[in-house]
Image (cartoon, rainbow, N blue to C red; front, side, top):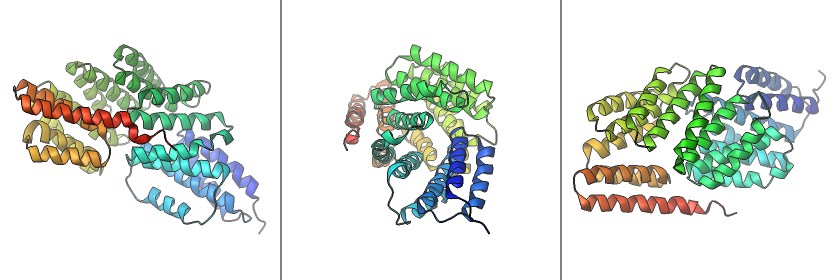
Length: 370
């Protein structure tokens, strides 16, 4: 049997990657199958085999991004690449670091994700593809947004969106970029600047009829109104998001129930909040989403159980994950709760916790260092 040229397979892998970046799952699956068939018949090329393994890794990240599966498939691919004993250089080194950063981000290991992105950035000069440059800036902006490094996040997301705006096939990434811009404006407390970006995202999501992104837009609109303490409007958007749920976007459900429950607690609608916490925990269990199950139980610790030890354990768990933004927001909620009860000692204690979390966020775990 005549061997397949590795150069031919390389071109096909590039096409496969293009479909991955466009979130075109059916096309990506077809190309993946074609590449797998040709890989078995290809002339020996160790670099191309590593490129293929990296693309399998990226393909699974795409699938998990669309619908998190929390299985071992991505982890197994990471182990396979690391155990290949093949020296990576150039673009392979870039893809390896970049994709690992995405993997750590998916596990909510944000500090580790940024460390991998910094390694990838050293090879960024080798990236001539504009869309790949946009992908890098988008993912870096997303991670810095989570870690509240707002100015850095905004710098990268604007670079990404400027590129995506030139290509009509990347509407999903445009919507996601608008989410990050709106979130950063929320952190600047410039809500009037955040809302137009979210309404534009909703318009684009409805244009491509993506129910998952429509639901996520409602989630983000709810978050913006919640931060303005317009709890009635926030709850309305969270409920609209829940109305958009389908079998293909069930993973968003725990997030919506968490946000809705927290808003209801803050507006003193305790009974309704508890009903939604119960639904949220059931949804989180069904999705095997330990993170939001923990957050939903944390709300119970704050507003219902109120046990000092439960709250302490909650903060310790969040600190171990370096999730300081959640610590800050939970601590402020607790301070506001005890302020209503005229318990000045606890108010001062939780504000100190919030300030400590803010300090850790500002330090950014030395994220700028190489």
